[in-house]
Image (cartoon, rainbow, N blue to C red):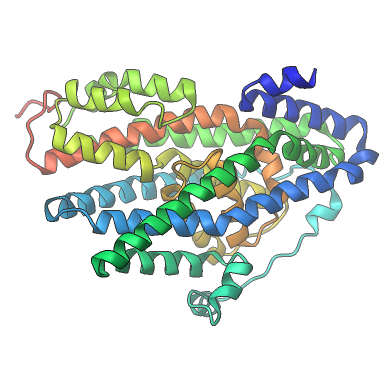
Length: 410
């Protein structure tokens, strides 16, 4: 039976772990103390990887962009600007909906969890904390913003070094990122065990199982509405601003969108996306071959929206009232995490733990949302891909390209 389980794909293993964990928590709540330590170890392993993932990915990404040819620098900055714009719109949409709908309010959790305390810091304290007195101490304590600042600083300056030193450091940072991803994959292999323990702990203290399920449906609905509004309202409005027919573009993108949805992977849809953007929308290879691969790495509209909603949902579920500053920090960190999430197995799980850490919220809250992550992963992957294609169209129009999807001139 164990061999048959191990032959299953990881997402099926996680699904079974969720089912078994929730059932074990409801039926055998007294057994939780003997199992919960496995979930704690799993969450510690994820936390351990946060700093190297963020540091190496940002350094290699920034230094790679700065080191491109002069002709690509302007295109790169313009593309990144549009990608940031669409992600900011997605985050604002999700933030508005989760604050209005309040999907986490009223969820029943163990009483000892509700008493979790969080540290409130002023703007001055946070600003001063951006530059640590001791970088080793900041790294050891998973202080995220100093790591991000240091990574940006290093990424901007590596290309300015003499050729020998630049090449040496570039290879070092790329190797560091590759090694981090290898270790992350090994940790993720153990995720069914860790998630089983986390979910069992969550459900063992829940007095009303059906109410918890109903509240999770409310969460799913909030995320789904946000993704739909972003896809069918804001992105089409941006395309119309550039005098492009949004519905014709959407029809042209049906193959990559279905591929992304069915595989829950924007990377798996990359070949179909490149083909559709170039041959159906008529965008030049210069724009297509730069914006789409870059977008698959840094543009995550759906992920940014979902992570923002999920973290605030967790705070609501735990009965924690967020300050305005904490809400802004969650939105900003969701943006940064969405940019750095590409290439990381189960990126939402890893990045969500980082955002919870920044906001001072309990990491165990991930156990609440992981159960519905698969279906939301499919939807957000499709939105990620659609956001990439929309930005490719907008960049093409700023380059004065004439496209077959242009609206007729009046």
